[in-house]
Length: 401
Image (cartoon, rainbow, N blue to C red; front, side, top):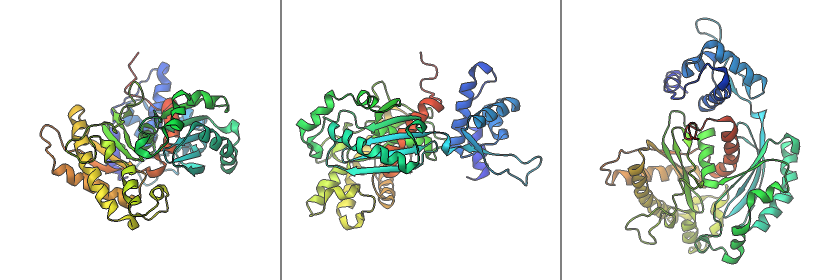
């Protein structure tokens, strides 16, 4: 990152520290958050960004380093005065077991404190059931831990990212309602707590994907933005005041049911901007519809179905974006999904084009950007959810009783 841009972003930091010892944990989270946003941080940069004293910054850096959360980079030389030493997140500080329950696959991974997948196992499936999920987890957990060279005692927690209400919308993705109904009475967190020694956190998969983008992506400087994740069904998340806002029931940013006007094929966003629509389209041409979920699949073979789907999806997304902007004044829209990077770039470009043709009276054209997590957003987001809960400041709940 250019040094001038870096300094500007640090000066624009809206979260200030306090020199009172009683809230040192807040300051530690603040430093960790700034380091995640900028990659590294020196004592001088931390002091300027937070308004803390140089002594307070030194104490916090020393504490975080002693706790193993931070490690030192090479000193920066060539400037006036003593060389400064940046610190960065220590990937080995914590490791998490993360389970992603998707409508077309199950994935289990060990993810480190820097959001890197250390080991993983994935199983494709036309639809998930509680029984199949427990069997997959039971058969793959030890293998994933061995591959990561981690014992169960070395794991700091477990997160499960999954769609809520899996028993709903079964017809849309061809799942048997009777088998999916088992999810209604299945308490996911409680069932997994019976078989693992860790605390278990469960979060909506699209919200987790949004957290992955916020915690591990390059989103420094953004405060209020929309995140659309194009998976089997479209979902997403909302970032307010620099923190993910999950909503009272954990469904904020669940854009699928959002109504879109004048679109043939359905009046909801999910009816147009979901991969299940592309599935059905390529299936009519004789292709394996589930092949789009495999990372090594060349989507070029599916043209013109991909091009037609992008146009259809972005027409609806443009309407959904304007509706969202009319409620909250977002400055950016981030697009990510289970698709090749080249397709994502086309998706972003088409959404920009559609918005330029849309009536924007009363709202401001937002920045449209590509997300960085891609297919692994949900599984990485599990670690992001645990890190957010323990090592980040939530501006949306900070002053709430």
